[in-house]
Image (cartoon, rainbow, N blue to C red; front, side, top):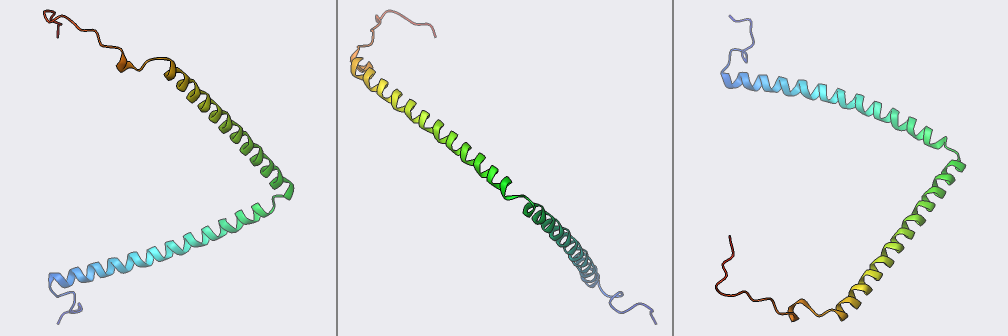
Length: 119
């Protein structure tokens, strides 16, 4: 009589089922424990960050908003300058094209048939 359970004495396929089942169960348990620890540490950090953000005074938040407003005004001023430069460039190009003839109006110089250009 054998001391081992009948599954141990089974076929190779049954051994693989047992092996992969045990490995899957082990990884599930370890993963669950790791996820629980990660959630605990994440929740603690979130609560700490919330307490720190609530400790900021209203004056400090107003300062941040004032700086943000000033930055936004600076950006809008620069965008307006860029738009004015683009309008100026378009106007100069339009005036220049009205004065100069288009390149297709000037005939291309012809070369003599006996001239051979080096390649």
